[in-house]
Amino acid sequence: MGSNTIHLLVASPSDSGLTDRRHAVVMAGLGAEVERQGRLGRELIEQVVGTLSNMLQLASSDGAEEVRMVATEFARRAPDAGELVRAVREGCGTNLRVLTGEAEARLSYLGATAFRVSPRTPALVADIGGGSTEVVVGEGTRPHLATSVRLGSAQLLRAVSADDPPSPRQLADAEALASMSLEAAPAPDGPRALLATGGTAANLPVLLGRRPAGAESGPLRLLGESGEGWTEVSRLELTRAALLTRELSSAELAARSGLGERRARLMAGGVVIVRALMERYGAGLATVTERGLRDGVILALAASRRGPAPER
Image (cartoon, rainbow, N blue to C red; front, top):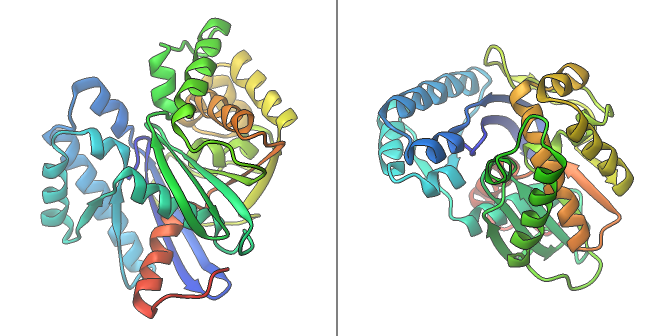
């Protein structure tokens, strides 16, 4: 459960990765609601519990044997997050864990690098959410230093009161704010593989026409994942993506790319953050992926059941 979306991932851990992956998502906008009214509120909590109950039924019908629920930045900020945790326990019979920023970052790093980054290869993973970005440096699948930065795709657009599409001045303000905010992230210390995960990063190939859009609206259903798990995006392609978000409204971006309008709206903020990350860390390429926090939760659960596994 993130600031923008609630995701369900059903997958089977194996020595070669997470197999039989199936995914469902709801654009819930929980972070925006916390920002607007300062809390979640009883009505929204009831809606969330209903969504989670439906997701649990989907997972069960798909053969899921164990379930873990985690919440991120919106719940760390919501003063009534404890009420949400209690309501989920009573309504779903499952514990909801509100992750610390560091725990979220480390799980995202594990999910993004597993079965992708070789042992002892320096890597940096940025998990770009709606309300925060977790930045982690490590080697292989082993994180060394994790930082949670209050910089997310939705939060950034709200901070500069962005129009749709954002004006040149608003984008310049967003770029400056992103650059300043990332000063709190680990300092550059040499070449590292840069992986970016989270909804806006993972949908960059969709915006660029390199793969079809997934389902983030309509009936809640599990869909099989297809295609490559990781996609390299160059600085030139990011410049093209930035031009699209600068010139087209969210409705026009949605019609062009197949993204939902709410996701299309967030892409402008996500593109700014990815470009700022590439600039800060001197990266010519960013590997964007849907693999991240959800994968990390499943991998950590599998590891706890069978004991430590060798690094991959």
